[in-house]
Length: 143
Picture 1 (tube, rainbow, N blue to C red):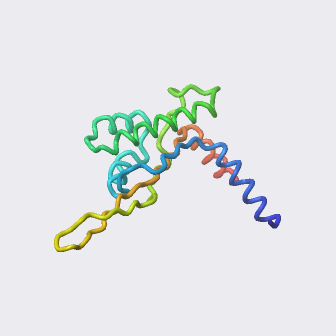
Picture 2: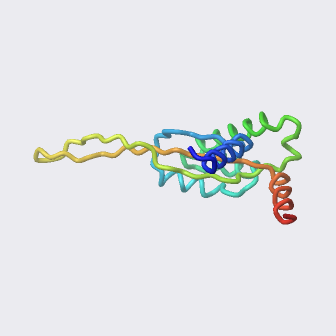
Picture 3: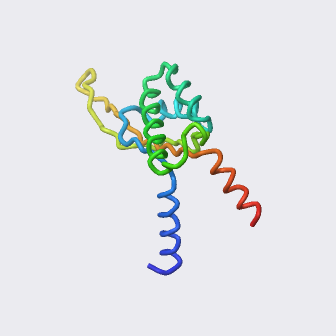
């Protein structure tokens, strides 16, 4: 590996260590259904996102709610000196990727068979504090 690639890999590794995120893998619902729920909370502050998910009737809402709570706990573990109430946490990134698809056979009339695709997905949530985002924006503007 060359020096440029190694430096880039180290920089990305350090950025990932500073991020507070949570990943839900192989959730047994289709990515399309999960994206409907995820789009409701993208960019919202954490408290309003949790309230929205609590009263959303979709089944996927409970999985996303637990995932956001996990991301908050991860942020808390990395930032022990800051209180959550003062941090103004918000959902910085949230996205859904397609997981593996289980293929099953459903018997059909006249000796045929229909394929059933049981889809799964991966959900990733990144939470960040509004104060930290503002600080990095000020540093970028000064340079």
